[in-house]
Amino acid sequence: MPVRTATPLVTALTWLRRGADMVGVLLFLSAFCGFIVQVFWRYVLNNPLAWTEEFVMICFIWTVFWAAAFLVPVREHVSFDVVYDMAGPRTRRRFDMITLAAIVVAFVWLVPYTWDYLQFLTRKKSPVLRIQMHWIYGCYMLFVSAFALQSAWRLYEIFRAGPETEAEDRSTE
Image 1 (spheres, rainbow, N blue to C red):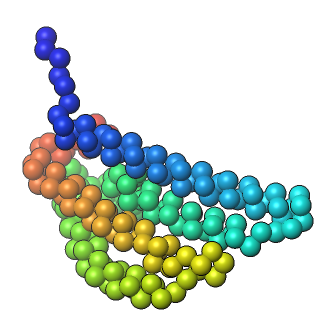
Image 2: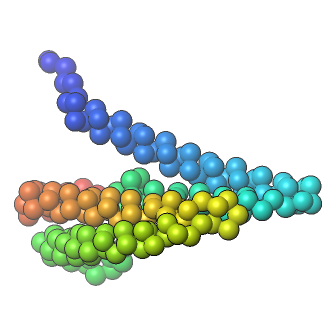
């Protein structure tokens, strides 16, 4: 039996996924360490540091948007699926197509407005660390772009799979 080797694309995507996971872990770890430093200096040394609160907030913002953009698959995001669960496979497929198409359109529509707002934020800096605000909130652009691409890819997979395959996928979940 021949041994299957991964294609270069699969290997690259695996490394990108691992890298995204590592960035997410480092962001969360940074927020946690900043929080521990903040608690120690405030309650043990009774000498609060000004920068730790802002640092933790920035790390938290980046952690949330990074995870939503690169770590959580589209299917795993929060959804209201009471009606969806009661529907049959064909109706579910239609729901998926409609909602994914709406997400793609809405998020692509958001890109120029987000970019415009980030350009506005280049004039503002954070109060303590003096970091330009567009660096702090730039992760939102990553989120909008990545989520739109993920949703478009998922929509493509649904169209490519056809109704029979989609029904089988749902029944095995």
